[in-house]
Image 1 (cartoon, one colour):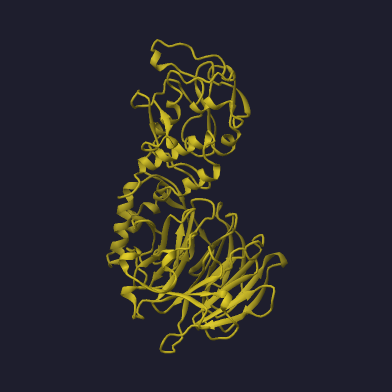
Image 2: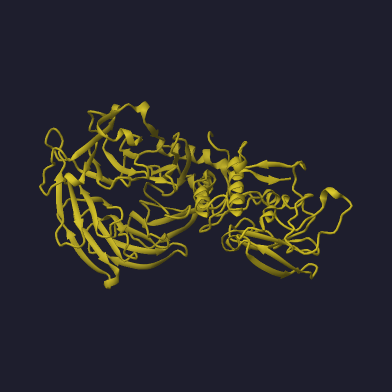
Length: 564
């Protein structure tokens, strides 16, 4: 595969971990770099399945802090999940008489305000703080497939329906406002399936449905009539090869955090329109657009989504029962996660962690998190997905698909578990070697007065042990302001060390006994060494070159991490 190799991805993660420890990058920047790592997405596996619905699960939404997952289903119920333990916190029949197609938390409501829309043509508001009261906001709109919340607003949102309506809602008022109805050049109503608001300019509203065009409106120019004002539409975009054809409708829209527009076509591919092309009446040549292909979007209405803190990846469901993940910059398929026996319709990324939730025709919700590093299976799972879409038998999918196995067969891999920000997983020897190698050579001393007596001399001077990690050179920094004292359970020596409190609460810390030089695992919040014993003998040696060098960046000293 093209792009960053797993080895370089791991080295970059190690380098950034070191840079965070010495204060050269902010913790948030470090966390975002981990979330954007290809290694994280390459090792996604099913963490658990959430089972309580009695129909297809059509919509998913994480709460603002990511602790609660909201789902809506054909059974007309919404469920609030504690997805980390796999249990239902709250379940409610909304009063809808048909399938729930979309449900979302309203922002700034402490996750107590929920809006839902359904195939029965109704939009409803559920207020949990008032004893789970349900209020009907609108009805007889036709099947309402999607809603878009105005960024930063706790009360305002928009909805689109199969009757071609675009409706404005304000929870502070009693009546919604039908802004306009979309019709084509032949005066036929366009059924709408997708709606999105540009986060870089919340005045721009994009809608699309059973035609090849995505129309973008300036909501400041919209009135209250049911006709479209001639001056309200600011853009109308479509790929060249689809122009003039109504066979390829649009099922999903998504804006990136920089204003790029992602459009998913039924019976066709996914196209990314740069921000500069989303203006005026634009029919773009396919060669000018980034195209994401390999999936199938024919049977159901599927959404399309960005992944990563800076929208580095694109994802969508498929008729093959897979959730596809593409690299945004070049369209390379990274994963094809087997998420359903039939069709994956919905994918919801966690707002803070490298976690995904998927749903489809099956009655459960699958939660994905980094599990094990199995890059060799990535191409194989894509081939399986392609065979399924081509009509090949998929009876062996469960046997062959690595994402349906809970445990890796490779026992030399250190899994990266859920809910913890961590670097790409390493083999046990490599992980421990990279951490300890910086402390196993001559010359790494600190002079801080807190490391205890020097290590006893050995016959081989090249293997002289010292007492701290290389970033102990920075003990004069105020970052290393926590003092810990411990008694070695090997030799009984009492030792005092200075450590970084941030590393203690959020990272991985080893401390070395000043008596026998054993490295003790103090904390491992990164889950790098969960399978290893709590201490490592000083006889451990990294199997590599003994000459001093750097890893983590080609020739960029800012990305360098020292090793021996």
